[in-house]
Length: 193
Length: 159
Image (tube, rainbow over all chains, first blue to last red; front, side, top):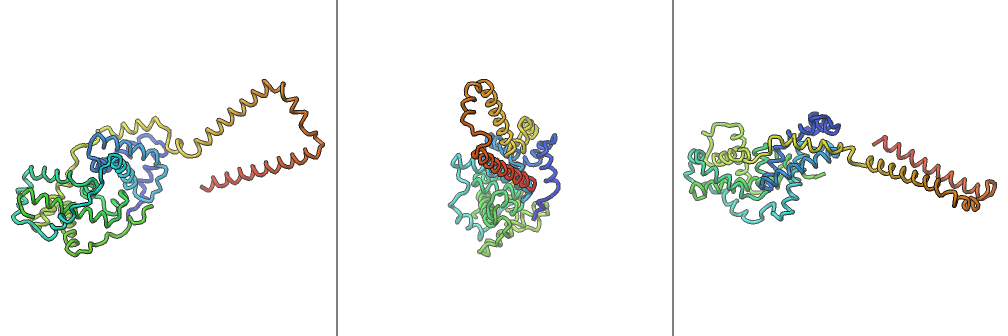
């Protein structure tokens, strides 16, 4: 469990609420990376993502007095960013998850392609581009969960606080996404998965 | 508050899925620690390549002065506490009540001489029984109002 009453969070929140010079700028600088990763992965369009990041921090500034230290400040701000991005997707009628094709992913559990040359794949820029394209093709929720888990190194309980999803659901999404990406990698290198 | 966020992470019902999950997790940890891939099997090496790709920074980023710009934008707005809640509303109510009282005083001062004498004739005399009852009623209303104010003040101190 996180130390949700950690002093740095409390000091920063108190400083922002007291309108101390530079406090809000520091809060934004400390958490803008997380917000960008969540929102950019959810909505993909850079212009929309920048605007939604601004909306997120304006909302944080407006509602900070409601923060009750029940979770880390990072999770609370991440939750605001996730909610704003989610509303944007709902407004644009973009589905958050995909409800078909799970069987194809699970087929990869028992199979492993032969002759996969990792060294060649790593050195091959085409393979890297192909993997990035496969990540982009994942549904918004799976892209976001993978980015939080790998790039932000956020734990599953923390992701649960940000997204409001159950830990088991997050685990299942991560598992299927990684299987699907492994399949994409093996397809790229011409190996029957 | 969301209730299920601190649930333990449950294992998959299917043992093969759970084994594959553990391989994925181990590969992620080994890649994070940059451990030598020589001892990894084919499956782990694939997952390590995925991990490496997923840990690469996103291509588009926020402007370098994003935090500074945003801080400048909110500096022009009122403080979070001052801008919200009942304090702003009560200040506005008080201001409106003051304006109303001043306007009423001005109206009485200008036009009062025309209609105040007519009102005075219908008022009860000081020694009439009705006056005593009216004074008692006003006393009760005043005491009730004062009690309400005192309770609200005491509650505000404990919040």
